[in-house]
Length: 241
Image (cartoon, rainbow, N blue to C red; front, side):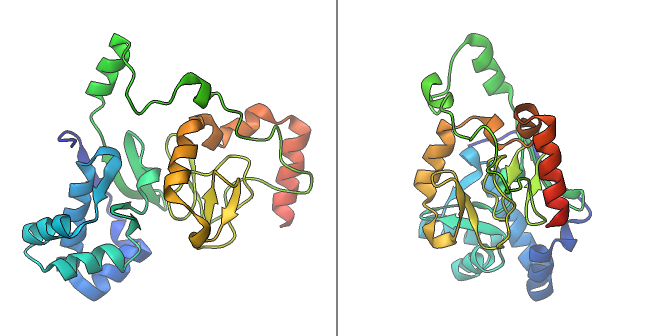
């Protein structure tokens, strides 16, 4: 559990479609429950909470609402993503160590205390979750996109403050990927393509991403790896499509 840091709410948070729907139907009470759930997730490792009856009951007690009501807020407004017995804010992957989810430049930002991590780095220790060097060096992207294809984010996607590319549902997306065209699709690092929700295996995807480098999900990598002529071709193709 993380007990340091804070959640910053920008004044445009209520204009986000999912939050607007929540407030329209549930008012300030529903919004309050949403914030309490966010506060719970902000204290969890990797911002992933337990989606069990016991945890829902604990949240219900804290919000003084029923367990069914808390489940309704988590499940029915697109604000959270449930993966088995774990769940997280649908936009958590846009957060950085000041993690941010921006809507028109402003949204929810969660900043995390990095003191422990910095101390570990200074002492030369490596976290147990850090993959071995051989895994992180795995070549995960083609040298350049296939001829005739374009790359780069669509209007459904976002780029966070660290430069990482994310799909509509928050998953990190390879810099070489074509734009997301289907609102429901997710980028599969295993299959190296956009896939429908039922073809997305969260456990396999999480493991594959651990084997990849952060640079694999940064759009700036395209500018570092592709030559000027190829970049111009991609930009011209994007303008025509």
